[in-house]
Image (tube, rainbow, N blue to C red; front, side, top):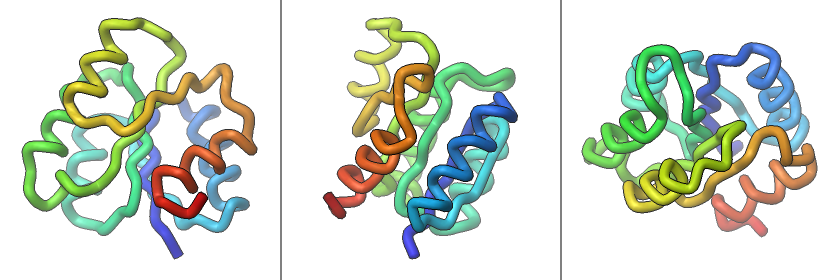
Length: 123
């Protein structure tokens, strides 16, 4: 079973996405901030990371940069999650190695599963 690390400080969003991903057949780990995301990504194996852009302790792009600079986590595909379609943040995330940018408020449950499958090469 493929494992996904879901990083989001908004509990309601996190619970909904976690449920959708589990119903899609994935095992899901959850982190609520950047530091715990980095710790979890280094100590457990994940096939994809869905990373919130705005968190209380670190920006998503900074977490992404740290993940991509670490040989242990750099191969893991990372898709950014956000409520904001801020062009500069999107460009920066893609330049730092994000494979996709998901607007949380616009994505349907089916589209989320489709995007994850595509990232994993299952679609």
